[in-house]
Amino acid sequence: SGIHVIQVNKNGKFAKHGIQKGFIILRVNNKNIRQVSDLEDALKEVNNSANTDNALFISGIYPNGKSAYYAINLQD
Picture 1: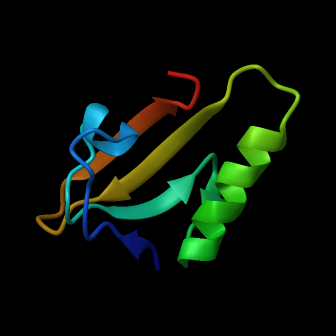
Picture 2: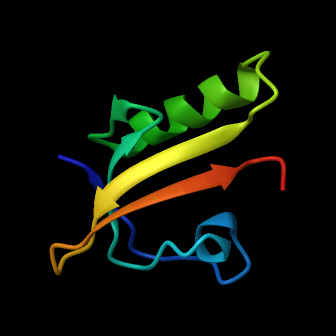
Picture 3: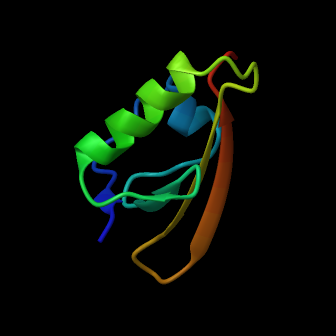
């Protein structure tokens, strides 16, 4: 399961926070990510939340087996 990052915009939030091409996103905000629509749903949930901590907590793995964790503030 998970979705594979095939491209990272050099000026985008993923690149700014260190996510690289090849990363496999497994979980976002404690929810399993199996397809792109799962990630889109997580983004919508954060954006529609009354919580002012508009952030994504992303966990996943790189093809070399290295696990990685990222916190991305969507208000930056």
